[in-house]
Length: 258
Image 1 (tube, rainbow, N blue to C red):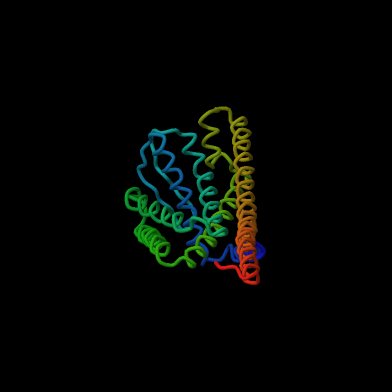
Image 2 (image 1 turned 60 degrees about the vertical axis):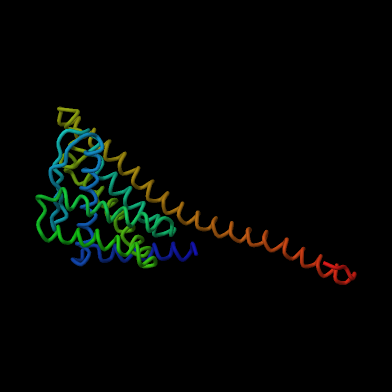
């Protein structure tokens, strides 16, 4: 089973890489951008801030307008949130664990932020994200195998896009990224800002790569351990039964009454 899962993951990654720049993947990548923006909003709310609006565009850009709250945590939450979300989806789809809860929580979160915080979002995206949120909940409730497949595909794409998104740090415009905003928040000297922004970028990149690889390794290894454990259980249950049957046959041969 684990070999099949790993093979499927490799094939899906290869297909996503091959079709990465094709337009039919753009809506799915915009969805990952939306997760990135929602992550900003969630942390802003959790740290006592206020979310004014969330919007995304077809060019895969997005903006979340917030005030108050913890600026640093809110800024870094975009990259961290998207990679953590992608990892959770991938783990659930790959291992088959908690898939209904994960999908329902994702769908509910999408509905909540789309309804209450999408004032500046165009009507097309508003309808799309409402449909995705509601559809995710319905699929989780009634279509288990389809739900697992969608979590697997969405988690793989989300993780890949989050890792691909890290390339923004190293394209020469690091000060325009969230890491650059954090650096500008603390440091005024331009050269030191760049160095600090790259340090933040490096940390986020290492954490993201480590998290994705650990999630895949744990999901596969956990599946193998689960299978081995079940097989041992079956052997332990079968052994007493066989011994009891042998004792019963021996008693019959000696004419004992039971």
